[in-house]
Length: 80
Image 1 (spheres, one colour):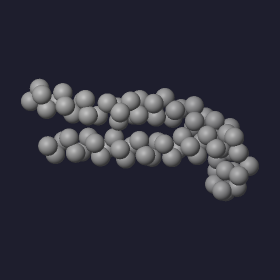
Image 2: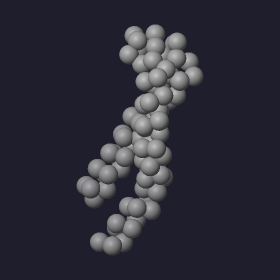
Image 3: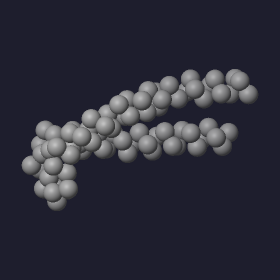
Image 4: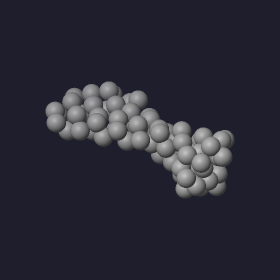
């Protein structure tokens, strides 16, 4: 179905973007001098910590949805 592909693509793309942000913000906490230099002062240690704290629960939710995607799609197919 078209909806199945759209749901999969949206989940995959969102998970990829959030993963990159979690990694960058985590590195911004641990190696803040390097990340501050790379981002030209936009992301300092405090901002990296705030971003990481905010995004990590969202990352976990999307990761669980991504992991359970075959089961979710299968139940949608069975109910239709």
